[in-house]
Length: 354
Length: 249
Ligand SMILES: Nc1ncnc2c1ncn2[C@@H]1O[C@H](COP(=O)(O)OP(=O)(O)O)[C@@H](O)[C@H]1O
Ligand SMILES: [Mg+2]
Image: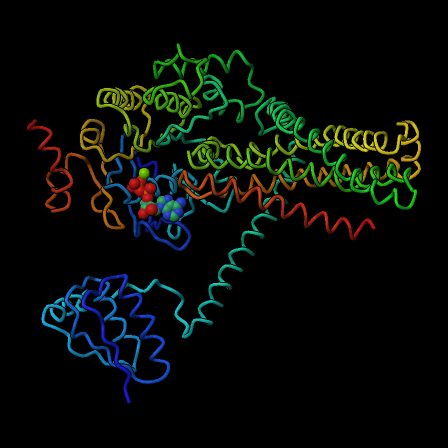
C-alpha cells in the first residue's frame, strides 16, 4: 500500500515547505507517491524539492510531472554539482568532527607554545635591556607608564570603591545576625588585599591597557611598521614590549596601593553607616587580621596579572593576520585571553597560598 | 657585479609556495624592477630578499655571502646593508618625521652625539626635499610626503641596496614621476642599487635597467629592460600592451 501526496496547483517556496513536512512524516510509515498532476505554478524551490526527494528519500516515487516542469527540472538537475567544502576525508561525520577538533586542538597547542616562547623571550629581553640599556626607544617606558596610569587609575579607583561598598553591604547583613559587626573590618581587609584588588585590577588592565596594546601592535603589524622595525635592525619584540612590561611593573604597585586604600575606604563607609563603627576602630580591627604579607602577595599577584595582560595582548597584536578587519578581532580575543589567563593564574595562586 | 643572486629559490608562507625555482641576479648600481600582476608574489619575494620571510627552499647570496635565516648575525648583517621603502610608508605614527628618520641611527648607534644625528637626518630629509617638514607627524603628511619620508628613513644609514615596494602606489602621476626621478638620482649620484616592485608600465619604462617579470608562480623573464621588448612571448606582449595604448593617448 502506498501513501499518495497530491501537490497543490501553486507550489512555491511556502507550499514546498508545507509539502516537505508532510512527505517527511509519511515516509516514516511506508513508501510515498508524490503526485505533481495539479502543479501549474512553480519556481526553483519546486525544482529543489524534486531534486531533494529523488536524491535523499529512497521510498518516494514522483508521478505526473508535466511538460514545463519536466523541462525545467532537467536543466535544473544538469547544473554543476554543489562543491562540497573540502574537509579531511574520513568516512563519517563523527570522524570529521573529531579531525576538526583535533586540528583545532593542535592549533591551540601551537599558539600556546608560541605564547610561552614569547613569554620566555620577553623575560630575556627585559633582562638584557636592564643590563645594556639598548634596543628600546629612549623615554618610551615613561610614556607607557603615563599612558597606562592615565587609562587605568580613575576606573580602578571607582570600581574598587563600588566593589568595596557592595561586598560590605552584602556581608554586613550576615554579620549582624551573629552580632559580629566588627568583623566586617577583617573581612573587607582580607578580601580586598588578597583577592578583589588583584583580580579587579587585572581584569580592568585587560580591558583598558591590554586592548589598547593589541589594537596598537596589530595595526602596526598590518601596516608593515613591525617589518620596518625589523629591517632597521630593531627587534620588535624588544622595542615594543620591553617598555610596556617595565611600565606595567612600575605602575601596578601604585595602582594596588591606591586600590587597597579605596576599597577599604568603601568598607569603612559602610561600617560607619550601618553599625556606626568609627573608622579608627575599623582599622584597629582590620590590622589584627591582615598584615604586610597579605599586601605583598596581593601586589605580586597583580604584577603577574599585569605581565600576563601585556604579554598576552602583545602576542595577540604581533601575531595578527594581514587584513585590517583582523585588528578588531585580535583586540576582542586579546581581552578574552587575558581575563581567562588571569582567572586561571588566580586559581593556581589560591592553591599555593591557602 | 651582482649584489644579489638567487639559486633555485622558493618563496611563500608556511606550506604555501608562492614562487618556485627562482634563479636570478640583481646587478650592483642598477635599478631592477620586479614586475607582475597584483597578487603574483612581488611583495613576497621582496620580503624574502629583505630578511623578513625565510625561503621555503633554495637561497640567495647577498654581497657575495649566502644569507642564513637561522643565524641572527647573518640577518643583522643583511639589515645593515639594506633599506626598505614599504608600500604604505610604514612610518611610526607616534614619532615625528624627524624622529622616524633618526630612529635607525638611534637604534644602531645609541652613542652617536645628537648633533651628528641631526645632521644625518637633515641630510637625508634634504635628499627627498622634506627638510622643512621634519617636525610634522606622519598623520599630517600627504601620501607622497609619507613615501618620501619613508625613503629618507631607508636612506639615512647609507644602505647598499634599497628595496621599494610599489613606490608609486596611491600617488598621482606627477608625484609618482617625481619619486621615480628621485630613485634614478640615487642610482646616478650614489651608485645605489635599487630593487623596485611595480606594476606600472610607465614607471618601469622610466626607471628599470633590469626586469624580473613574475607570472604564474615563477619567473617569466629576467634580463635587461632593452631585451624585454624583443622577447617573443605572448604574456610579455599582453602585459606591456597597455604601454602602447598609453603612448597613443
Ligand atoms: N602573510 C601571508 N600569508 C599567506 N599568504 C599570503 C600572505 N601575504 C600574501 N599572501 C598571498 O601571497 C600571494 C602573493 O602576495 P603578494 O606577494 O603580496 O603579491 P603582490 O605583491 O605581487 O601583489 C597572494 O596570493 C597573497 O594572498
Ligand atoms: Mg604587493
